Figure 1: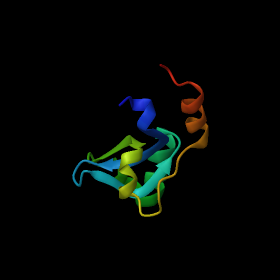
Figure 2: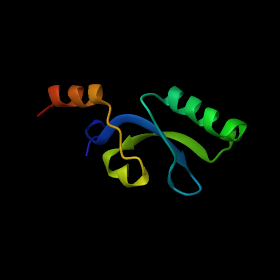
Figure 3: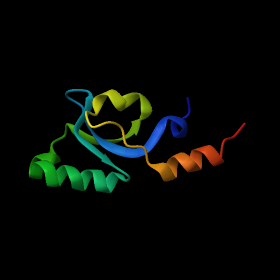
Length: 83
């Protein structure tokens, strides 16, 4: 599978300790995901265990509120399919 086919267009906070997405953060950019993490837990966001990763469709089970798919990203993928 290619990266752009499975990516939802959203970024989340990955924990290297628990090997899953944490805090239910789904944002359209890496910077917005970091800012959401800082707003949620404060200065503890600087710990080494947290990383920003793109959310794939197969990671949907890690989000209680459901997976948010960036519609603009989906339209781009649908219009630019390569053979």
